[in-house]
Amino acid sequence: MANFTPKRFVKQDAYQLVAPREEVFPLLCPVREYDWIHGWACEMVYSESGVAENNCIFKTEFPHGLGEGTWVVSKYDNENFSIEFVIVYPGMAVEKLDVWLEAGDNGSIIHWRRTYTGLSPDGNRVLEHITGEFLDLMTQWTNNSLNHYLTKGEMLRETVPGS
Image 1: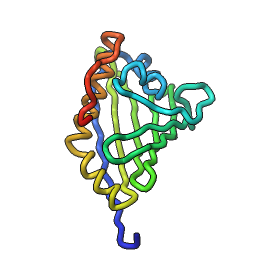
Image 2 (image 1 turned 180 degrees about the vertical axis):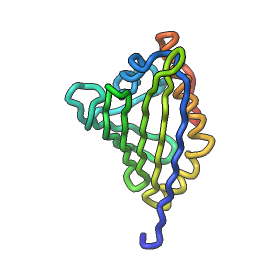
Image 3 (image 1 turned 45 degrees about the vertical axis):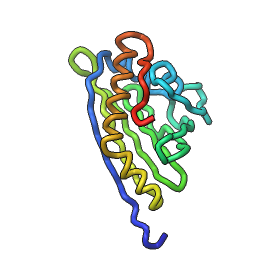
């Protein structure tokens, strides 16, 4: 590992949503995501309230090479409509995911900032693959799914890109 140099990828996007922040923010929760993300699955490890909160921990399986991820809610600020996660993919990568909402015309604006750091040569290779067009497609699909749920009150039954 002495010759290993971790790669870092940072990607930030913003999308218009059709509902106000107060309606959107509670949906940014591993439990509530079952309502609006087609194919979502997680294992809740720790939450005092049973939903997203500061220091909540849950696990997911990432099907595109990173494997199981352990998510820690490192910041939960419902007054300022922001949530941050640190996701560890053992031996592969660490992802820092910052999500915040701002008021917008006819709804709100959701901001996604993802910071990926490779932990191994294999992790670097997977990150190179998933942080380009694939990540753009996933982010667009997530926002489409969220807007569909906010508009129709039901999940968008559309396949996850790349699955």
